[in-house]
Image (cartoon, rainbow, N blue to C red; front, side, top):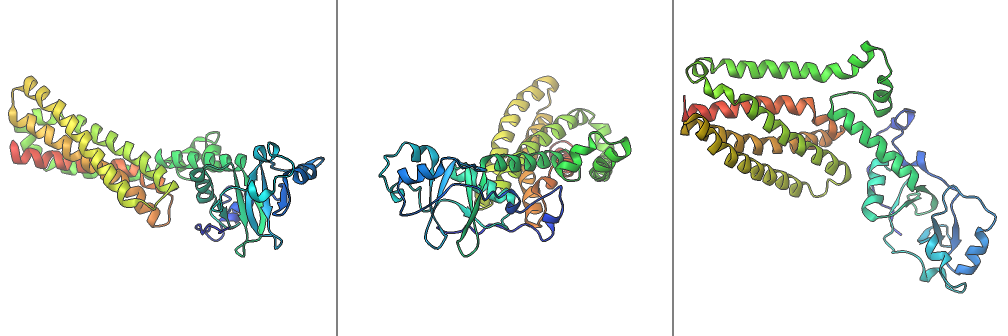
Length: 337
């Protein structure tokens, strides 16, 4: 039984009572265990009259205390009394983690394996307990809440952000204001971009009509990619290239569809072929780039050691807005101005 090598929690993380990162915090030791040479009947009798923190599985151990396998309780109850446990144990690759494994990585490992209890062993293979399904659900819920807060531009850990809902206004502002200040800086950049094309916009006022649509649609595409990227990176970073190419391809397909719809509508409404082409090409390019940014920012934050959800929300919106405007005006410069 191999112990999975998962990233350990950051040093000192477990000292914060509002943010317990190591899986040892969720470990329970009162779980059914049995010897590998036992049979189903003897194990069933040994369970009578005992109380366990989690009894969904029986953890089968070797004489040295190492985990030899796992038997689901339902499978044990349905087996004939003389059936040896060696015939009932689950697959030899049953997921096992060390007590210092990161809690989110461990819970994600259990989900991918489709199990409801995660075995925990020391580095030498000695079994010390398990993480029950209820604990893994609690872990994933807390991680999900934290990601949602980060994507909304609210700083702080999940517990702190939840507490802020009942906090006075100045405390709520403390959690929300930092990324909004970044957004203000991005808005200044977007304003500067538009100012460079003031004369051209004055001469071709119809170009300005489509700025809100270009910016909104690019933001929407990027937000969808951010949500996919944050969850995918939290669960599995091993297939990075596939995720990136998949989101880029999705952005191109969406952009092509939006462009195909926009072109005839703009042409019919304004009778201007160049304007229709500008809007369509800008939608295609902005959607493709927005989907890439929506993936790249969470990935960058993950590589830097931060929660990937920090790379989305207001920060991504600022970048996408500025790039969408720049793309639109560059296309307009080529076809109209």
